[in-house]
Length: 245
Image 1 (cartoon, rainbow, N blue to C red):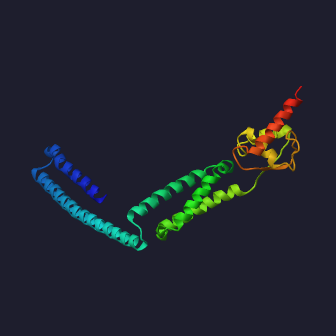
Image 2: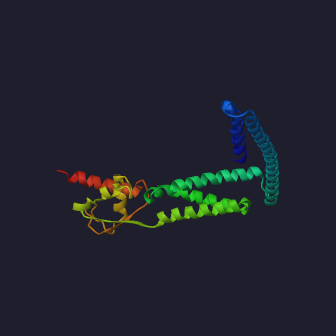
Image 3: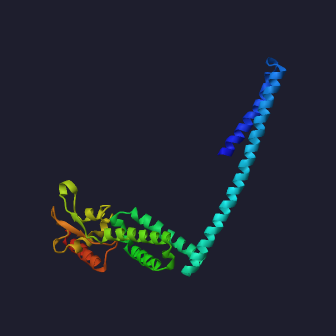
């Protein structure tokens, strides 16, 4: 930035060296020569200052290169002590980045959506536990990142392990029935999964067509009907067909 300012100043001085030519008729020759001498002196001084800055910049670049080399040497010595290579660390870093990015994506999902990724989260948890055992985690920046990822993942898994419930409202106000409840975005976002709620609440629901306000229904996990739930649904549909006039 300082060098840029000096170059700009040099440009201005160069311009000023030319500008007096325009007003030369209004100045005496002695005045014009004195002003030109002053401008040229300023130009010389600015060029000298720029030269000094160039030397300083070259010195700083050399220092930076030396520091980079020292850091690389320290890292190599550390990796050797841990029994890992630079390639091992790079691969570890890449995999950890992928896991961190995936956890960030999962954090943007609702609990209802997260239920569908339970197996994936268990897999990520297993992988992070394996990574935590690596000597690379003795390097603070990696140990801290793995621990942070584990904590975030644990929070996500905890949110879906809590039993989810839904309190039934009235038909006139909420239009609550098993079909409509299952259709809600924060439940299953799929009305065809209503048998899951029925089968998960057999202690309350005798007839899936009848649910009462203020009942607290358990909302089972899953995005597909189990074999038993499908069988129950088929029996229900068959009975309805037989009862039809």
